[in-house]
Length: 131
Image (cartoon, rainbow, N blue to C red):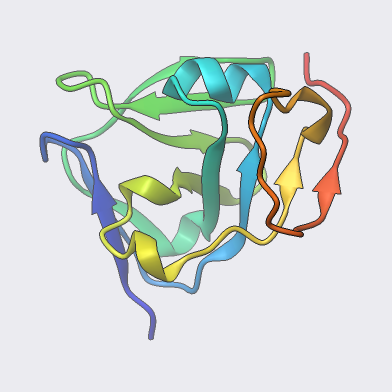
């Protein structure tokens, strides 16, 4: 069984997942970029049923009508997004095993910053913006 763990920069919030990572990807949307403070954000999904917060809990804010984002209230690390789709999506960089999960595609590619040149050959999807 796969066991994945991770957490924030200060260690106040930690999680673990007992499932294989699903759909690792880059997101270029404006909300992700601003929430994390980076030109692109790498994410990966885990089923809610196999995911748990093992220390502390993130603080959440609703970034859209369908999504909430979790971060550490103490250090500000962005940790996850959650929707009503049965998955928790965590930042790949927050994983203890981040080097073992590589993004497989890009989403919201139409919002990619022009000066960011990622010649990785991965598929790029333009998606409708969320309300």
